Length: 67
Image (cartoon, rainbow, N blue to C red; front, top):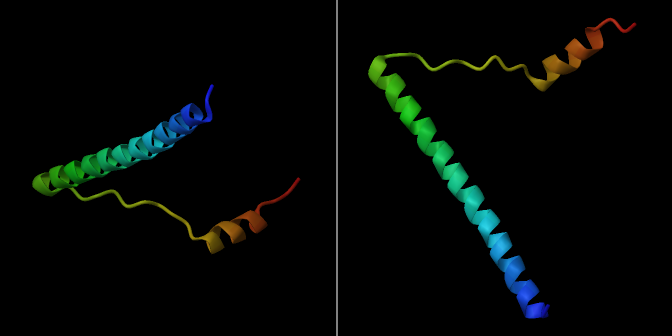
């Protein structure tokens, strides 16, 4: 194949991947906004994530009993 053909394949593949990722992100944002709107209409409270800080994870790891 010609190098121009490889170049076109690379450009189409790269920009196709970027566009695909961008569309995926937009879709995820739209779903999130719809879910928030649904919760606001029903008066339901958003679930709070049960996240630990890095410091808590560090100390929990040290506190584990190693066998």
